[in-house]
Length: 66
Image (cartoon, rainbow, N blue to C red; front, side, top):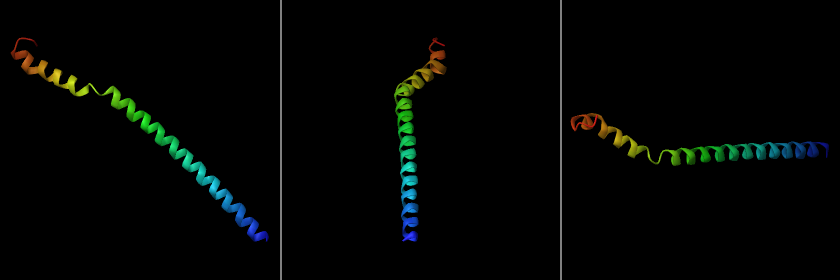
């Protein structure tokens, strides 16, 4: 029975380690999701700004706006 008790103890430790790893991975996932949301929100106007910058470049110069 000593061997079985040792095996049970080992398996319980293995499960605890696995649960800790899963918790760490979920935490990292949540941080990445939050960062992605922040970047998405902050970059929603980026294409419009790029278009306006292009218009004010050579075209703006030719029109006398540059």
